[in-house]
Image (cartoon, rainbow, N blue to C red; front, side, top):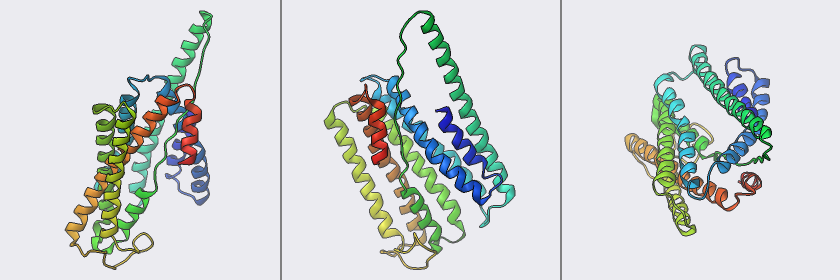
Length: 283
């Protein structure tokens, strides 16, 4: 977890002094680091959960993980009011993000320190030590495409950057609510209950995709456009549809992911590393 999180720190830190080569290099490192981080965190969560707590722990973890969408997107909404991101805007933003990453590294280092102490105590007591590893997550590309559609829709005028920030905030709220609702409150245990939650998430995402199809011009993902959408909504109505869609897709995404991870952690307890790694690879 510490090694994987280190690549996040370097990636964020590179934006303080942006250069083309550093963007490519840190992006490649981040790809490796993300796989390491999520696999290790999954194993850590699986090792500290049982059949009674897997669903709860998965929901809490997912809600906390997605809460990161709130802080960053609120900052975008409140601070990015100009069309150009200046140095005075970039420096405070990525300095704060770098400090946050450094705090995470310190927490992981503390976990390592505690583990070393426990292992030393076990060795002194001549007890065998067993270790596990695994899990992974992935972010779907729809967030980027959706934000691009908003950014390219000229009818939103100069408020486009702020709307993208609000989109991210509502998406994060949907993810957090879904993580708490589907993992911590309802706590599905049987296969049929998990399947029902996944089906609910599927229909929520279908609603979102349909709303995006009727709300944005067909060429919005590729370029700035004045083209009308499939249905001609007013600017205010279009914004409401976009915001509701952001919340709905976050809710559906959390329903799907919390149940998938819960099922994998419970069904493949003894081989969690292989199960989560294969899942992440296919996904």
